[in-house]
Image (tube, helix red, strand yellow):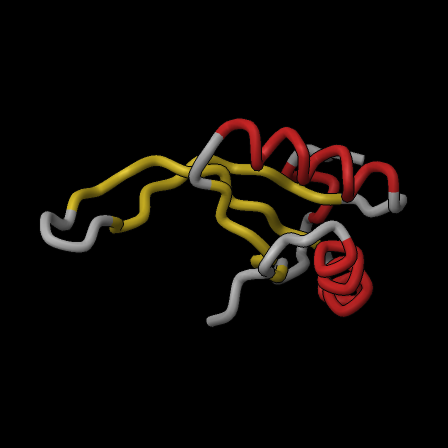
Length: 85
């Protein structure tokens, strides 16, 4: 279920996905909620583009470190490609 930042107080959260499109963000919320994970969504900027780099806004999805492997597995099953640092 989507949580507020204070729910994860004191934890270094794991970034699992950067949604570049609203429909992807909404679908991932359904996947993570349906699988029973607590997650945090924050908007932030990222650099994108091939020929012309630009700064864009995306939805950054975070989970608790203990949930990271299972959340990534659920994302793979739903055909999402989790974020790799």
